[in-house]
Length: 198
Image 1 (cartoon, helix red, strand yellow):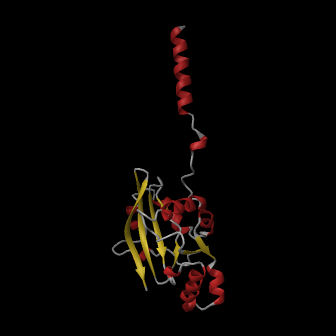
Image 2: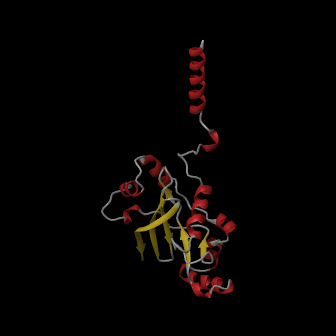
Image 3: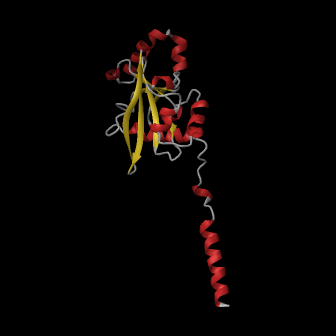
């Protein structure tokens, strides 16, 4: 009888310990816009160590009209560069993020104190070549003349499945920088891995 009680105790223990905690489950097949915004707030707010942007006061477009251009990465074909950088063996996970990219809206960053503007309104008012003058006017009216005609556009980040490596592109009017962000000991480190320039 004692062995029978021990047997049922062990079966119960194994059953309880193997039961999945639904509150901790993350759908690793999808990277939500909310997850992207949370990450961007975290890394862009770090203007001391990461220094991806000079300040939260710099103007951020609510949408980046550029698209990831994988051919910009020399000596790599197609997505191989991303798989290698992100150390991700699940190539479908990474490829799905690229293939489903659309204009990523950064508007929610306003909730964290960032200066996000609707660039469609600016583009409707002026020619493309006149955007820098418009941006300079906005920076001056916001009390940020030190930024001149500076503004940034942010591509939707590309994550590995563990969410500890992220490829982030920050675009300017005529150039862009690709960063690999790696999380180590609960803090992010950056490495410049590519870019473009007109």
